[in-house]
Image (cartoon, rainbow, N blue to C red):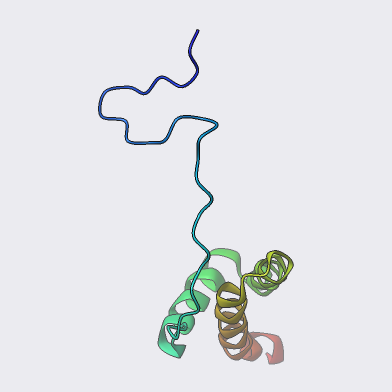
Length: 91
């Protein structure tokens, strides 16, 4: 039984012959504040006050795997969540 058979139209490389992915290039594209605010609103609507913990967990995971772009994006979302949720906490 051949485990390297590809189906018609299947463009994937056979198992065992995969090439290593190219390293990610640094990007100057960061999450803009309006985008972060929109993500923060969506998270807050879905998860309420727990959205902050969720975003912090995602940021921690990004740091653990060394994903600097994701870490910066989650930090921007966390800042937007603080601004959005603070009035709820103060009330």
